[in-house]
Amino acid sequence: MMPSPPVPDGRGMLFLMAGECALTAFIMAALIVVMCMLARRRMPWGPAAVQVMLLLVLLPGVGGALCLPRLLGAGGAGMWPVLQGMLLCPLVTVLPLRTLLRVPASVSRTAWGLGAGTWMRVRMLWLPLLGPSLVLSACAGLGMGMLAAMVDAGAGVGT
Figure (cartoon, rainbow, N blue to C red):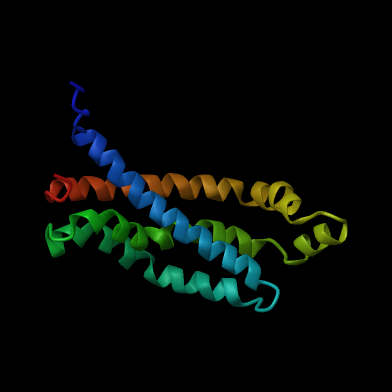
């Protein structure tokens, strides 16, 4: 007879919900930043417009992520971390996007002109430039994801 799998305790569920929330926010943030990087050539004002829109929804998004389980009850408990991650996406996206706006568009063109391929530009140019803001963004996303998971557990959603 095989032993039954271990039942996750409250902390394990809390970390799982926080990770799911942060992962959703990171995936959406990565898509937004990549789209802004690609749009910089055709629309130089594009990343700035996206940043303004993200700043407009930053505080309501964070507040909504924290208040969501209290406002709507435990009806969609499995979807809360994903919805909260979507609401936390502006928080995770603003820092790398701000760094992207400070880098001149000619830097990537110069690297391309010197013979750097796409992956070399990503590895040698964009990751070092965006690295510190990505780390800070990851810390903010994980922290807010953990806070949102604690609010969920307090509202009885994660149980």
